[in-house]
View 1 (cartoon, helix red, strand yellow):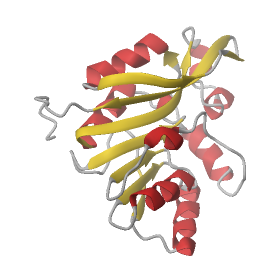
View 2 (cartoon, rainbow, N blue to C red):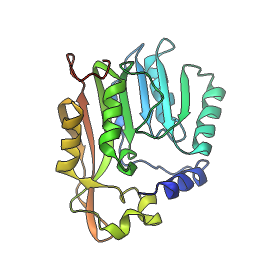
View 3 (cartoon, rainbow, N blue to C red):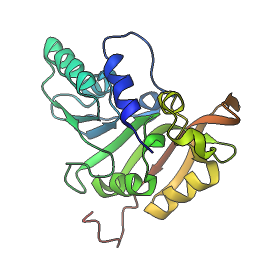
View 4 (tube, rainbow, N blue to C red):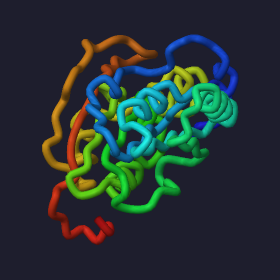
Length: 217
């Protein structure tokens, strides 16, 4: 799936006031003082700055996005507020420039569905989390397979459902990555997109405190 339409869309909306997410993962994240957190698809940095307040100056928060203008807007906001324990990074989600087993919490809102290789993304989330680390992620799943003609359709990509996969496939990816205690916190009723129906949900899970996966954690 070509994600260039998504990057272009987010660049153009960086100064807008609209909401771009499909959930409120940060509301369920329960960030604690001194924790290290990561927001995948951090946009204008709103959730990063909120997390920064929750973890305090002895914690740290990374924001990861692909849109330069979103990242710049986030950096400006952090500077204006005098928040220095944050860092905004341009990166794809399947190859994060973050050391393994260094993160306590990963959040994301309606971003992972865009990734062509979702298993690689979730493997990366697993890699960067400490043993016992956790994720809270809001995303979209499809009730049926997304027709091929929509996979690279600019409008479908921009509306955040072109890359959606079925719910059971999504949950299997989390299990394959190695996560445990996977649970659905909230879930919407199905709604129509193109010729299919999709739903949004917020998921949580943890990296085992004892693992032998060779991830460095």
